[in-house]
Image (cartoon, rainbow, N blue to C red; front, side, top):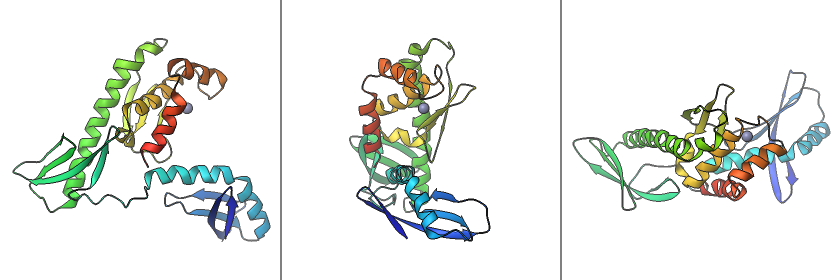
Length: 232
Ligand SMILES: [Zn+2]
């Protein structure tokens, strides 16, 4: 089954099951699945899908930014990997120890186990994790926290892989940032941090929230767009 939304054709699959209500979900592989009660007719399903079309497309686009048109990373020599918005070519070197560093456009990974891509992957993942925490904390503490002196206490940073958002701020003041952000330019990370810090003052996305965001980061919309583009 499929439907058109704007210029886009979106395929979906219907699963009839013993349940009372309909549920639409978009999977990370961009598959759209509708779970419907056994006797639902197709027209009802279609009209429900149409109503949710904007939401469905938003989910698809979200997953697209993590599922680039380029194939998934192989962790082999010559492959490019992003760090703070710049692309580095991976160079795997044999060595007695394990070490990761960036040098003149290269992502140098030294490993005792040169042929093992899993080892290279885990070394790089650990490196990214460490850098994310360091860079995000620096940006928060040195640049932005002073602008939000209202709370007078720094949010605690948690970095993790998140499927559906760039960041979030809990009631307890924990700022969670998506680990993927370390691949984006610094000013895009700023945008996410500032957005979340604005939630220290306004919980929702009302007009006051955007006024505050705009006063601190007038170019936020441009940065948001840049972020979405950067991680394709
Ligand atoms: Zn928000």
